[in-house]
Length: 54
Image 1 (tube, rainbow, N blue to C red):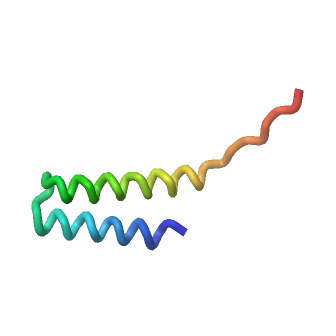
Image 2: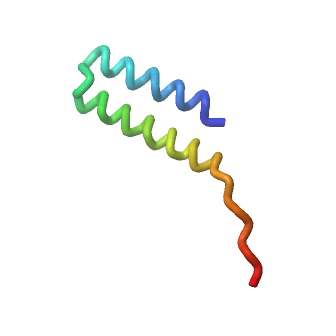
């Protein structure tokens, strides 16, 4: 589900780094977008234990 988006964001970040440098604001913004989509991907894969009945 997230794999294609992750690859798109990763490519965008690498292009920004190549064009503007690794510490540019453009590259950092692209990296932050990639981090967000990675976090969403990891969270969607978490297994939530069933709640305990009392």
